[in-house]
Image (cartoon, rainbow over all chains, first blue to last red):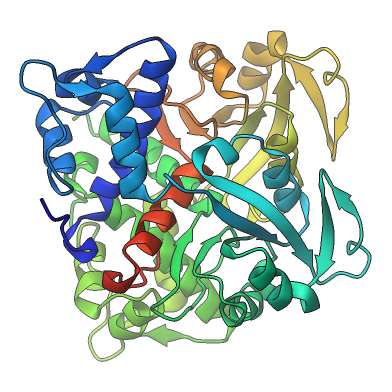
Length: 219
Length: 219
């Protein structure tokens, strides 16, 4: 079965694939060999129908009378997500957040290897961050090419985000995860996602606010 | 006009409110007094129809022949999101990520004041993190009550996430932003959101995998 076109697949379905993958890895760690769509759905607070619908965009993975084989489904979801290979990733911005991300050990086994870190501040260039040395922005193009880097974590201040984005795009980066609290513009050929902590906090605040308002209204 | 019930409002609409707010604040900074739904939509890569539909869940904010008054709409969106007040926030976990979040200066003007940090590691307790001192978990209940803390940033390792979540819930925390790469379970009265960097990277990886069919989506 041919996979659907990416633009025909709803973003929430792709997001749930990541959540299924986390749970499948946890099930594998606990020694599970097979799992039903109902169990997988429950583990992420969803339903068997949702699991089957999400996976159906990409093919037929269940086995009649068995359910899903955990190891097999992990491999298939990783293939769909593109993490059956390892992506080389750079960190643009060696501030607190950049350093926290470099110190996190969990990316590599998920398919993302942090291989370089850049900063425009001469005081930071040359410093060691774990196994890496902070490089000047001037080395971006050469390093991206040499190390075949596809992805960038953008951890610069908001005021520098667009300028550094433009540099990343020119250097050939194909995907940017933006941590700066500002929208960035990139060509359509570059995948962009944003991770703004304050936005997430506002979503929580909204829920808490509404819970209060609803209670006050006696609803 | 009565606002809709929270559960009748799609999450993406609430998420877009945060994005509109960021853009409105940028427009204000550039001296704009009014803005059309088309301009606001364009600034987040969306349409005027989407802006009007999202705002219509909460009331009627435009002025005929004028559009939206920037200052007024900022106040109204903040009121909707519950950030017209300041929420006191604690950080659970004083590792690299916890420290990066504590060092970030941008939360307070968005309505979130980091007032306490906790860790279960005796080697970390008592250390200064900026203006705060790392407290032991045993002081959680008393501090949450004394400082009227509603929100928690959960930055502990995956293995400790559920146990610390249970402690936060018992202490009276009403909203948790989970950074640990694992699902946590909390009562329905507690709002939970997750922010998993690897999940975001997988979404980018998926798009890059399907690169030719992919539109570059903002987030």
